[in-house]
Image 1 (cartoon, one colour):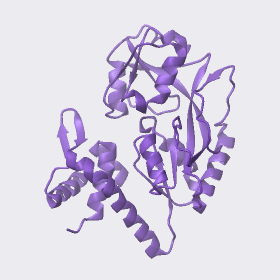
Image 2 (cartoon, rainbow, N blue to C red):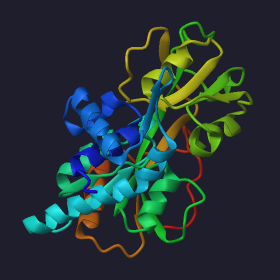
Image 3 (tube, rainbow, N blue to C red):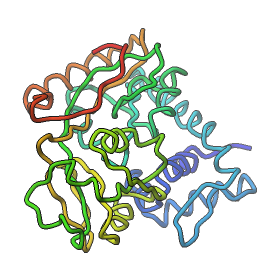
Length: 310
């Protein structure tokens, strides 16, 4: 059978976002148009790729099996178009840590980095595997151990984080909080601990024993869960634009201020010329915007992994 690349691209985007509205926005089409493309693809394949219910959208078994080869199909189509146009292959850049919106930072440097093709990574292990397989050229997110020896990384941005709390939380009225003041609260995490290294390193460092997690259904759902329980709190970058969630408040952290470290990650020996341009653009913006300021007397961040480039 012949696959329609537009339909496959719609599937990949929806599979990675697990939200048809966001996926449609990323593709620049209506949600109805996205649904039609996926329905036609499911009809062609003779199987359902998504399950839709009250808890949101998730992949079926067939959808999960189809995702990896579907990504390859989209990447091959993009490469073919670039080759036919004689423009050479653009730099393929992926991101992870989606709940903290890494594209906010990458968008600040994209103009000086040449042509970029974004990917659809969901976590560090999957992005690292794609780098090692040569499916992408670079990636952007928070690097933490264990990290494969064939990968190099460079610190790009240190971003302060705030606490988010229910307005019914006993500490909600504070102008600022010290991290240890949260010891009696429950750290709420949008996923399993192995995918949320920063939150759990924070809890270990500042003695927060009570931790709980739910399903990651996007930032709005995550914050609504925090707002719904006066015992919970979580952490978000201070400059992250938050949706309007009733019953939620955001409080700065100080003494020390936790810093979320964003890094650029690539495969050692990758000679794509766009990689040097992207690295230079990140360094220039870091200098202009003072992204790498760090004072151990007032700031805290988990120790970076050993090895790799800086």
